[in-house]
Image 1 (cartoon, one colour):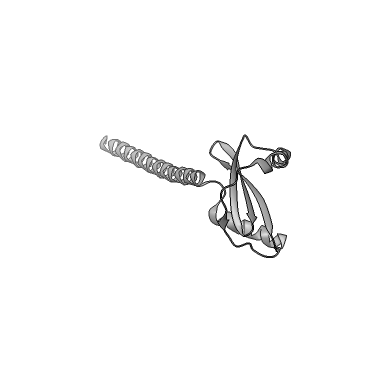
Image 2 (image 1 turned 90 degrees about the vertical axis):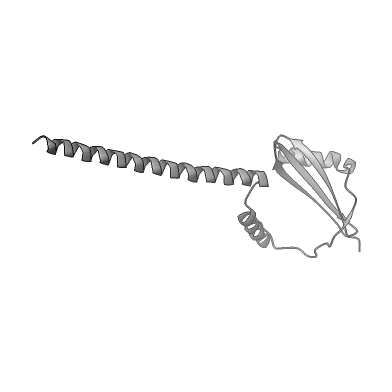
Length: 138
């Protein structure tokens, strides 16, 4: 029995939106990458698929196993949620930027805490010095 499967994933990569077409024919996976530019609307993606699918240049086929059966939509949604919780949303560069921002935030908090403590210490020393000067007068 000849089984075929096709799919499209649209995601943000760098400054552009990219679509990856995947198709499985005769147990072989082939892919094609398309750059959309600005964020495409649903109807624009659908129109692109209808007009350009047969003119796309797919990669040579790679052996793959086609999973059998349908998956309950609730289970699929649960699995997608688990994947986003593990990997997070965004590309690796976006995740790296997020880590960098978090590190800077902790550094900034620590520096602010040290400044507050130094100011507190300085004010305490001034207060002690004033008390000594008042006491010295008599």
